Image 1: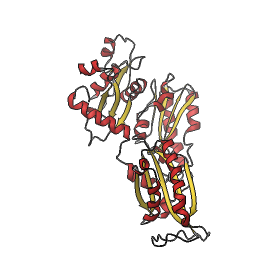
Image 2: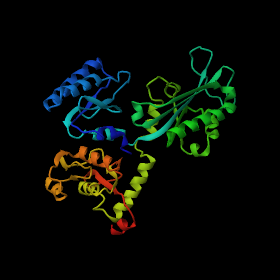
Image 3: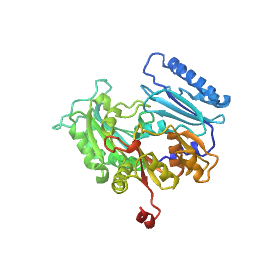
Image 4: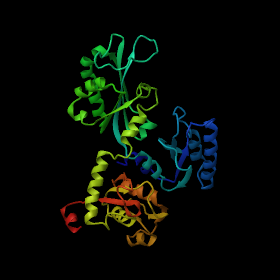
Length: 387
C-alpha cells in the first residue's frame, strides 16, 4: 500500500492533534454518545497543551458523517488551527484516543485502510417494470423473460475496506429482459471502461440466487482480461439490488470475497520479501532490521502485523532517515538534537518520507519477529552483491 495519502500530514510541521473516535450511529441517541466521547478527548488534548484554535477546528469536524449508517469511526488531524485531514474509518477504533505531539499518530488510520484493494461490484437483478411493487419474476432459463421484465445492472467502484464508508462511482442501467442478449454487450463495454479507470483488481458480480442465465450472458460478453477477474456470488434480490445513496453496493458479498486477501502489489511485495528473508533473516525482520533499513534509505516496503510488538519510543531527528532505537545511536550519526517519539508514528513518518510502502500481513501466514519486517531496496548490483 502506498503511503502518499499521508503527504498532507508530513508536508507541514507540527505539533499535531490526532484524534480517533467511535462515531457509530447504530445506537439510540448517537449524537449524545459522540458528544460525550469527544468531550473527554477534548479535555485530554487541552491537558496535553493543544492550542485553542486547533481544538476549535476539531470541535467543528467531529461527528460530521451523520449520513453513514451502522458502526464506524473517525480519524481527524489538525495543526496550528487548521484541519488537515478527516477520514471515516470502516470500523470504530479499539479505543478513543487523542494525542498532541510533533508527529501525527497515523498508524490506526493506515492499518484500517489495508489491504486497499481496488474492486468493481456489480449487482445484476430482475424486476417488473409495471409498478406493482411485487419485485421480479423468478428466473426461468427456458423462458428468459416477458415484455414486463427488466434487467437491472448497478455497478460501483471501491477500495476495500474503505469503501464501506466511502463508496465510489456508481453506474445504473435498466433494460428489458428480452433485449438482454443484445444490450449486454454495450453494458459489458461500460463495465470494462469503469474497471479500467479504477484499475480494479477484482470484479464481484452479485446475482439473484440461481439466475445463471443473466450472469452468464454478461460474463461471456466481458473482455477476457476482465472476465478472468470476476467472482460470481449469489444473494437475495433485496440485498444485491440495494442502491441506496451512501450505502456500498453488495457490501456483504464484497466482504465475503475480499476479506483476508492482499492487493496484487502487496502479494508481490510479500513474495519478494519471503525470498529475501530466506537468504538474510537478520536484515529482514524485527524492529532493529526495520530501523536500520530506514536509516540507510533502503526500505522498499515495511511489513507489519496489525499489532506489532514495537518499543514505546524511537528517536528521530529532522531528516526522515534520522531514526534510531536510542538517543546514543542517533548521536553516532551526528544528530545531537534528537527527540523521542511514539514508535509507530516515527516508523510511518520515516517510511512515507523515504518512499517506502506498507504491507499489513496476517501473522499466521507471515510470522515476523516483533511483528515487523522490511523489504530492502537495492540501488544497484553492487548492493545486492554486498548482501
